[in-house]
Image (cartoon, rainbow, N blue to C red; front, side, top):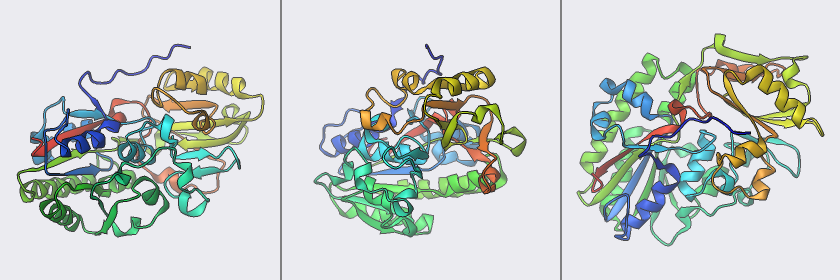
Length: 371
């Protein structure tokens, strides 16, 4: 079928191109960015371009850095595991294989968390189907919270980089600046997860989110002033965020016709991977289209691949990981499997994963030598 999907801003870059283009700039051959001696990409987890625009008064440094067209298009699904992998491999999910928050492993049938399953469910580096760019022959560094050192996802998508751990945001900024100011040709991936964490718990429209944004803005301003003039700095994000209060939850309970014929539910609340029982994929697709097409994009696996949602090419091995039916929320709703005993995920307010501009359009701000 023909899907009516949202159009991207005409000048939006793809998040997958950011690091390859930074590397080209370090070689004096950049197309997006001017030549630079060293470079930092500051990845602010959860900072959508529309979130930043709506709260520009609380992030005056970042807001005045760019114009409305200084944006990038993150990947689909608009979730951290998929987006960080795309950023650091330069590949879409259809090639690298991390195509959602929770995916079914074809060989075992287990539905595995793509952020933490590396350390608990047996995923290893072979699960990643694209080589990390940090494996290239240049000095590369990851500056992040210490707790991420040695984790499976970090090892897979940042293999070859030197890890520098610092829990305090300002300490991370200072560490990144020290590296690029002293190491020629260095590339630093600088990760700030604070905003996303607060947004999930309290919502991006909360006072706590605003306070965290103000602190982040001040830290980014200090970083830009600390780096040498010939160092490039890019500020971007993996996804934006929408708030979904509890009364907007769609709870899937026992006996619900929307779970009839569904063997497993993967993905995340705003972008479901539905794995059908044998021979029931068409039944599941029709049931969801009949009930939910007014507020969600409901598509078959073939529809999504044909529409290029996972990139121009989807490897056969990756296609097997995708749900038979995909449900991407268009309205401000989130789907939960209420049959599960663990209700803790239903406390989450800030959410992402789907195709809306709030979730997929992120800042792409150029500072330092890139300004």
